[in-house]
Length: 161
Image 1 (cartoon, rainbow, N blue to C red):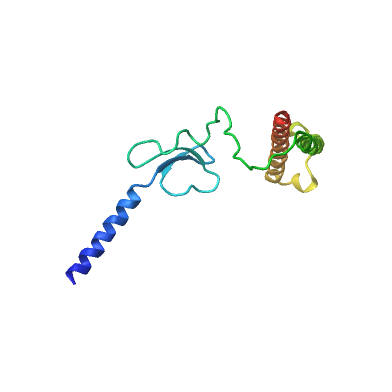
Image 2 (image 1 turned 135 degrees about the vertical axis):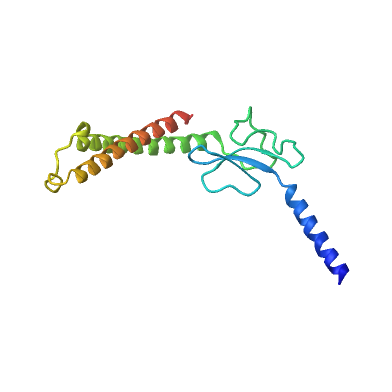
């Protein structure tokens, strides 16, 4: 009986030692708060760096650092010829330009409805100022969202070769 207990304690100690040897990683959540964990991150968290249990770096560089140059593709890795890639880039550019045009129109419509923060109150809003303020907030948010979308689309278009 005593030998069985000793083995169980020994197994527990070894299991704990294995967990203690795990990498500790630094993550940033969506709000920019920093978290340290040896567990996989929550959705939306960005990996900043990792350190092994012995104090050494677990990875050569932080996850968000851009590499100086790309590693060569392994032998036998499928390649795309230049003409095919050009056609794909052209299709991507057209889709992004179509999205940009649609988003620009949506922004113009949202700005018209927002009317520089002073849209005409609707009949049901004349008696309830809180409803009017809530609608103005939604309209302001719609304008901001469309502006961010346009900025992101322009940034994406700039990356196409």
